[in-house]
Image (cartoon, rainbow, N blue to C red):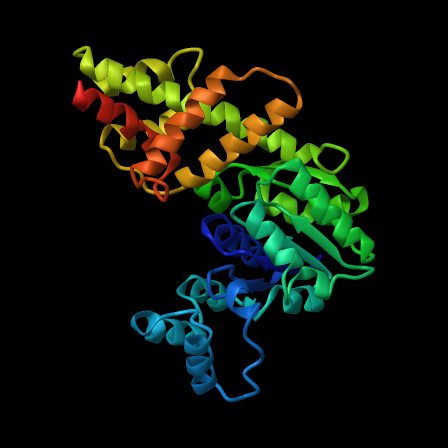
Length: 338
């Protein structure tokens, strides 16, 4: 498993790709962005005509306005800044998902949500155009079981092999190779991927049939989101009660509920600083999907439902691109208005 394709170079994907490169894996990557699939669905090949073609086509199809045209053309000519570091470490950047699949025996995807995961597979210039017998597709995105199963059926219908492998962990564990990998699907593909998983994570679990990995990840993130809401309420309650929030963190760290999330997120939350390691909009998406899973299984989840409402409120406050710990601001704002 020396050369691995990688689709999606966001906060997680870029960190994971860098780890693979540093450990000797060749990497052929593709960055998912608004310019990628959306434009490629409409625009034909430039036929070697270069930027003049793109300028005319982008305007003709009304994909960008004049105010954004120059920045888009810059990206088309020079690539995306997110890719620069990877290229310096030996990665090759592919033009489309199909191009990555064609070149690589194994391809990993790390995408933002079910819509992105489906788009990369099913849209024009997508995975299905080149997946075939002998090729493996490993989707490490956090999606629902239905999405994962739909992708699996399409991949296997073309003769390919599919493994879902969502991860527990955010930016720092991704950078440090300390993710927890929750795999399900093709066992042979899992075994072939273990060398890469050993680089990306501290532990890999094989959970059986497709869908089990997605379900496990949603349960984990549902618990995490609910805990973050309770933690946020506790910090504000301590402050409003005349206690020092930092002392609360010290007490929690010595007790039975000590955990890395409180220790890592607490100090910055006290300072109202939320640099994105796991964007709040993605946490809310996971809460929504977990609640849907609860509906399917007839499991009452009032705590998770309340937490989801808090994340939705945070998104309405414009906090979606900040770290999910920014849900703290919803409690802070309630404190300030009382």
